Amino acid sequence: MVVEDEALVARDLVSMVKSLDYEVTDLIQNGEAVIQSVENNPPDLAIMDIVLKGRVDGIEAAAILWEKYSIPVVYLTSFADDLTFQRAKLTEPFGYLIKPYEERELELTIEIALYKARMQRLLKEREHWLSTILKGIDDGIIVSNEKGQITFINPSAQKITGWKEMEAIEQPVDKVIDLGKQIDFQNSLALPDRQETSLKTKTGQEIPVELTIAPLPEPRGHWNGQVIVFRDISVRRQAEQELLESWAKLQRALKGTIEAISIMIEMRDPYTAGHQRRVAQLAEAMATRLNLPVIKIEGIKFAAQIHDIGKLYVPAEILSKPTKLSELEYAIIKTHPQAGYEILKNIEFPWPIADIVLQHHERLDGSGYPAGLKDGEILPEARILSVADVVEAMSSHRPYRPSFGIDKALEEVSLNSGILYDSQAVFACQQLFLEKAFSFD
Image 1 (cartoon, rainbow, N blue to C red):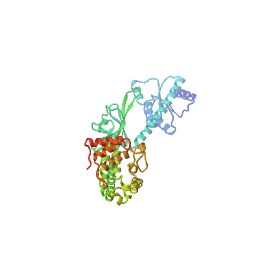
Image 2 (cartoon, rainbow, N blue to C red):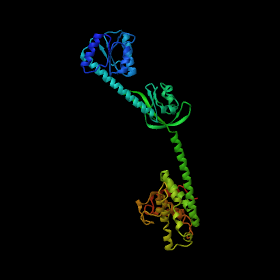
Image 3 (cartoon, one colour):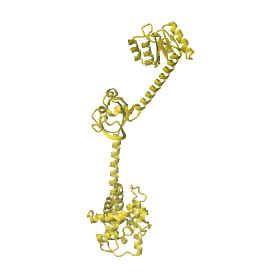
Image 4 (cartoon, rainbow, N blue to C red):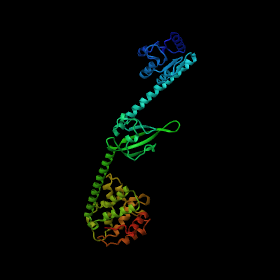
């Protein structure tokens, strides 16, 4: 489109434009006709004289073309006062042509203007695309400038903070994202790892959030703002709390079940009543002394509380026999680890309870039972349990013999440390008794 009120100049300009293989959609002589022409046949570029006859000059027409229709404008001018130039600058023209001009000058001005317009349209499209994405995601996003003032806040951030967009824009970021004194936004340009903290909303409500901060760098290496991404984790916190409570209930139920099983076993073998409980106490103390993780200590304790569950398959008269057992009776007794394993193997404990119970009579040199496992084949938990089991059994009364006493029991495991019994487990056990840090109830 060419907008020029001098007929001769307009004719020459149209001729030049056509010679450059561009189509001229319309030739207009006044600003009033520009809008109607654009509505009927919108051009890619308007070449417009700044000074036009009529009520609407070139500057007003150019402003309408760009703001309403996104049509770039190149101004034509031969002279103009400072005020006119200042007005022209406000419309952000895509080029100037000073009369008179050469064809090559016109060609370059048109090419630059069209390229600049394409880039601006692409930039606007990308800004719109990015804005749509930022407004659509669940995370709260706030962008601040180098002064710490908010320049962008997405709907999720508005919902979390309670601040509307018009209220939040240009506000200090730490006023809208009120974290108390937990994070200093001015001195914390970056916080790449998600940090859990507490945010106070506009209404004063405290909510848990997960937050990251990233600087907005500029080409020269300085920063010109921040991007703050955060999310409300109230639902997650509640779910975590409910999960912890459920786990605690499960733990209590499991503990009660194991204690019930332990009591049931001891009711069939009254002469060893309390054996499993005392073994569990010692095994737990040993595991703690060895600095094992809490989860492993819990597993050892639970396994120890039911390590003789397989004795449910052993006849009661053998368990309570007051005299020495025959070889056959002893062979039956030795089946209890395997029987215990069969009872427990299909129960989904959070620990290898069935295997610990199966191996608690194995010995490092392979002389144990039921599988004759050696050193590296025996679970660490079973090694601890076997030492605790031997020490408690030897130091307690049995129907067929009196108690050997704790000193004799410790001597037994000490003499066979590294041979039958795990040396670390033996050392932990010895230290507990030497330091008087443990005693059987």
